[in-house]
Image (cartoon, rainbow, N blue to C red; front, side, top):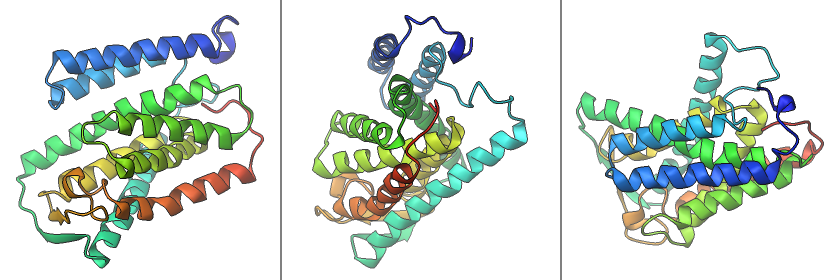
Length: 260
């Protein structure tokens, strides 16, 4: 069923209620399974995909022709390149400012593969729940900037709910909400933001924390300490320009059709 064919009664309130129900089920799945395990992440991603697909949160615009595998791969890989670029900004600033000391990592290939899969499924879960659902709910809004603000709020709220959250991790969640939300609007689907999110998670997590590099983050507000590479003021400073660019892009093209 396309969005235009949905019953009129299924408006934003229905989408929000259904989405919150799906979110609650994913949290229950994490509680029943070890929340840090691959099984929990996969279960949450599959539940998010199934549940939100029923209210029109799609990987590609349903009003466009079905994309070929080549087009999908190009969108995802373009997103991955953006995610690597964002990671480079954060890691580069940490390196230049001595916010982290970098050594050589030596993780086996099997662990790198697990990290890649985990990053992909986690990005799938978070993009569908934190951006896809939000953009579906605010779909009637005809301008981009308020949609990005909504994505910023949910990104910050999700970061605030994580163990050990602080003002810096919440700010990072807000900034990434803006950036990934803009990628959703640009792509008119999930492949571009999913690729960016998965790559960012993989590089700053698996690769930079014992995979290819071993980033020992300074125990300071700037470095991030136990919160990791994306937990300090350095990450906020590195990601802020990207979020500002996304907001500027949204403000320059304010009038849009349905995009979520």
